[in-house]
Figure 1 (cartoon, rainbow, N blue to C red):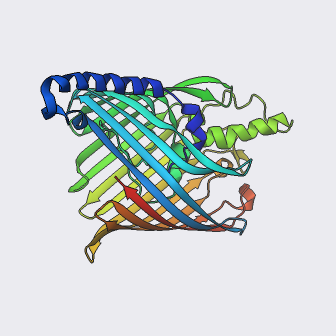
Figure 2 (cartoon, one colour):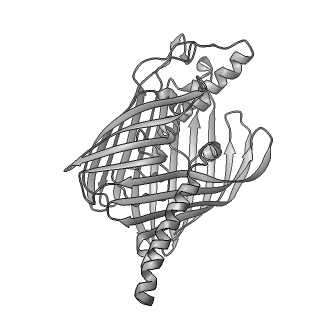
Length: 396
């Protein structure tokens, strides 16, 4: 699911604070229970929402270099705990526990860490809300987290039907310490946010901001329409640029071959447009994002000029019921433009079949992904690659 492993150790944050908050609430509830007897024994649980997903998968991949490999992922767990002691207040913590392999040391092991910890304040069904903590910035709406917040006060996230990360998610995701202020006026929603984190360009803390304006009408189950326009002040703060671009240039610069300070002040704002339409058993969702201006050629080039990278994802899904089993069939098309320097493929086609195996708790998923790389003239291989994945998931 989410490629969160590289960020887990960076975000070992307010575990003690969340635990302290939970303990304080537990104690206050326990005192009330002593006074009211066994009739109040279950009163605490009505404030708590617990959910998660366990996944076992096996995949076979043919890379752009025509190398074939197989892999399995076991003991993968996502667990979310939401506490809403008051209608005006809610908090959520999501953990990830998964099997992982260190690409440099080639050692397999397990990683555990907090990937999201947030507090939400706002009146129930009110016109404003405030959400702070470690969370995905609301720039991309294709989020892959299976556990959603107790306070879901935005038009997203869009739940992809795929196992693999959508290209727009890879391009535009950023999990960071941030504070989001949201407002709603009828079907119209908007938010502004500020974020704080390290920057590979300067190795100093970096602050930034963004905003979004959306529209949501109807309910997805019965039919509805939503769209969202988002802005972020600097694409260079996103994970795909920080990890795939600036770290590589830093390594080159250490060897005396790369740019030095040319990228330290290079800023490229980004825009994202997302939409979702649901009509009965059919739903479509799409997202497109692009840099506002071109990067310096010394930093991110495409051919003979600076690149203006963009990415998009489009999915069409159909829900069905066959032999007493419900399921979903999804077709997707994704792609990028002038993004070879970010290590993303030029295009991607995928098909996903997911079937309920038991009581809408146990699901089986089969996924086929076909990627096409950029041509050799643009630092690619010009080759194709395929990934076949079978996954067994338990949601609770």
